[in-house]
Structure formats: C-alpha cells, structure tokens
Image (cartoon, rainbow, N blue to C red):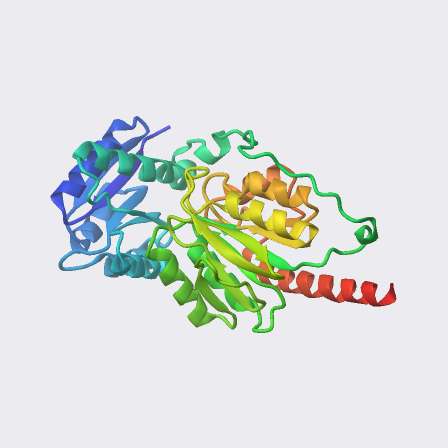
Amino acid sequence: MRKIRVLIVDDAVVIRRIVSDVLAEDPEIEVAGVAANGRIALSKIPQVNPDLITLDVEMPEMNGLETLAEIRKIYPTLPVIMFSTLTERGGAATLEALALGATDYVTKPANVGSVNLAKQRVRDELIQKIKIFCAKAVGLKSPETLAPLVPKPSVARPVITIPKAALGIVQRVDILTIGVSTGGPNALADLMPVFPANFPVPIVIVQHMPPFFTKLLAERLSSKSSIKVMEGAAGAVLKPGGAWIAPGNYHMVLERKNNQVSLLTNQDPPENSCRPAVDVLFRSVARLYGPNCMGVVLTGMGQDGLIGSEHICDAGGRVWAQDEASSVVWGMPGFVARAGLAEKILPLNQIGQEIVRRVNESRNLTASFSQKN
C-alpha cells in the first residue's frame, strides 16, 4: 500500500505551508509537489503524478477555474479539491468549479486567529476528503466504510400510529424533503429541473454548505428549474411548486400555524458536525407530516440523514436513496441503504421522474379513495 500523493496549488506561500504541514503529519499522505499558479501546476502533473490536487480559486497568470478546465481535458477523473474563500465571490467561483468538474471544495482558513487553528481547520476539512476520494487508487479502506453503521440517536424518536383507514393504500405525499452533501450541487442541478412547475407539494432541502454558498446555489438552481428555488428564511410559508434550501450555518425546521406550514431557522448545536443538518430537518418533517412525508438522501460524506430517515420511517413515511454508482460519495445514502431504511435505491438520472410519478400517483390514489368512502 502506497501513500496518497497530493499536489498543492496556491499562490499564497502561507497557505501552501499550512496545507503541506498538515498533510505531512498523516502517515498515509505525502506532498508530491507545490505550485504557485495554474501554469506551473499543469507542467508538474506529469512529473509528480499526483493522486489528488488541491487547487486555489484565485491565482495570477492562470486562475483555478482556467486550470481546472485544462486539467479536465487531459485528466478527466483526477480528483480536484478547490480551495475557496468564504465570500459571495468565493461561493460563486466554487459553484462554477463544481459545474466544471471539481470533485469537492474546502474553504480557506481565514481569520481564525492563529496558525495552529488554521491547521486544525484544514485538518478537519481536508484529510478525510482526500482519503475518501483516493482510497481505491492506493488500496486504502475508505473512512466511509470504517464508521459504525448506526449511531445512538441523540433525540428520542416519536412513534406515530398510522390510522387504520390509511393502511393498505399508497400514502399521500404532502411534502418532499431532500438531504445531500458532497457532490450535491451538481446532483441538485440534475434533479431540480425534472420537477414541473405544477409539482403539487413543497420541497425542503439541506445541502451542507456555508453561508453565502446556499443563497447562490438556490439562485443558480432556480434559474435552471421550472419551480422556484429559494434560500430558506424564517417565516417563509411553504407552498406547492416551490423549494427551500436551508441557509448556511442555520438548522431549518418547520412549524404549523393556522393551517399553514412555515420555516424556522436556528443556530442550535451542530449535529453530525453539520449546521444545517439533514437529521434536524427530517425529524421536523416527520413530526409535522407523519406518514405523508417523503425523504430522499442523495450523495454525501458521512451519515447525516440516517437518524432523520429513521424518524420518517417510524412516522410511516417513505425514504429513497441514491445508488452507489451515481454518487460522488456513497456515505449518507449508503448508511441509509445498509440500515434497511430505503424503500428504493435509484441512480440519480431516475430519481426525479420516479419522485414525480410517486407523488402524483399517491395524491391521485388517495383522492380516489376518499371519494369512494
């Protein structure tokens, strides 16, 4: 078993040093080389033969987006992790990089107070991603397969009794909730345009992303979709034909008042090291909608969404998961699938149409059932 070879591309000497020092601490990773801009990086790739590249977005001579485009022409499967700033400009560039084929991104450790804190930020965000994306290439076991399958739930799960009259029929779907992380922006870019403008239920989404990024993602998705996609805001009333993405650094939950369901946001402690967390949203949806909710877990690292999916299933709702072959990382959907919670496990290119079919079918069947009784 050999070490994972990483090429670090960044015009800032300080960042190159921080990343190099952090990677050198890990016995399974080695720094194959460094480059101060894209042109140098492109010349070094055939020399150092990296397993993965970390790529700064903003650089002189050839920036990260230009470099990424060239990398993808010659090395279409070489993992590339973008380093972006936690700003609106950085968020826009990151989304563009993901659309161009970047594997994932991390945010630069700016204004954290000390070099040691900066190193810890890089350590927390980067090491696991490198190992997951390169595990097969070097013969390592992916961290996703080493984690325990089912953690102890942090919140007691309610048991909801489904009315006897509803048993034996397809449950009416009144809301769709989606959880997604690594690979999510591109997965959502494929999925959201499938929903027609008259999609009969609201959609609520958690995509693990920092502030600025979620607003830009919502705008980007909305411009390509028939339904309106918005960043979630406290007080927003859910309506059919709309989708709301939890804002970065805030959990999103639902509340019902006067026959209307609206959004609430909070900064309660992270769950699964995430805020927003899929589990938080899924629990809230299960509590309000019971058997009439549908959850979908798409590509993502870790196991956020597992406990939330248990809540949805306990409430009588349905959970689907993306399959391994079409996932960038089969962490979140993999945990749900292996726990036996997924009613269906589908490739990304089939999930959208199947959701539309199931939602429409459930509403037509239950409407017909009600009329007969």
